[in-house]
Length: 431
Image 1 (cartoon, rainbow, N blue to C red):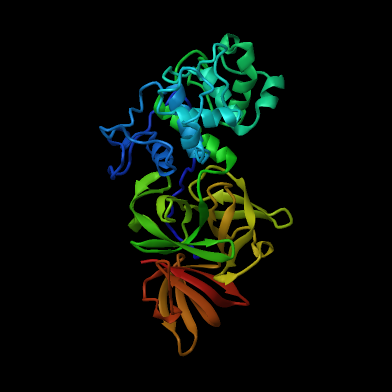
Image 2: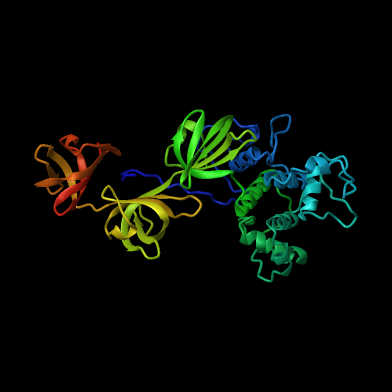
């Protein structure tokens, strides 16, 4: 990986509150099983759940994202999304535990949730599958699915919502934990509104957050090494894994709808497979930044980083197995120096750097001449003075991000270069 003069900072995985904050679509609509979520703020989460077979379109092809979600629907999203529906068909044939679900199409899924301890119904032995679910009930359900029910019952911390006094005593611990784990965030006015109902879109977002907390959102994760119209290859640990792509695969890159042709080698990729082992959903990320090294803490695996576009110095953790380069060569974190220009590529899930590409900029100017025969290059500095430099036999050169022979750099090309013992060891040009 080499330095790049232009870069984009991608914000990754912003949690959406239950209020359903406004989002704007930045990419053209692409094919979707649900016509009414195209370009909406909930599109990513709904399509991820569709890939996990957790939600299905109505006969009209609609998801109805703004309608209140029912108790049965949200249970269905959770049971299917977490892969706990294997016994649902069998459970749908036995005597039901709730007296009002015999005719429900969700009967087996509700029974699965009951056996898992996620739901217990009402004192009159009803489940009320078609009733909209209250927000306090939904928070409690999500916490039970996470396995934190015992902690919720004994929780004593403060609930910070403006209307905390309206949250029933039985629900306070559940709301507190659901908030702590980012499952719910409340409304923009600081309220929780425990008795209000939740839309299907908001419920889908919450279910995806539960999957994230449990680490079950995807089937495989790795770094893309090959992209083709028919398949993807991911580096997973020390191994490469190749998967065919299902027709109609859903692709997101940096949380925007994309196509397979938008993916690049080096992208982080998180994939969901169908029952045939084909990729049916891809979340790809390439999150990078360019700036300068302020200081290096190699013992603790951090650098203090100053972004080129401003924002102030911030600490950046560097992964233990990060690919680190300095002046075009493999290096260690301890080899970096204050003042190095550095290009960072981050892991989306952790925010740590997985690629660190540093250059110590000793020379900046334009090429006057380059002689491979004499291994010399003349560069005119921005002060107007021509200076002659020897070029190391092992020098590395790039032009517009592509590896080139340094002697091929044309007269007038703007370059930056790094020196070791007075010789150019790394040079980068842009035209």
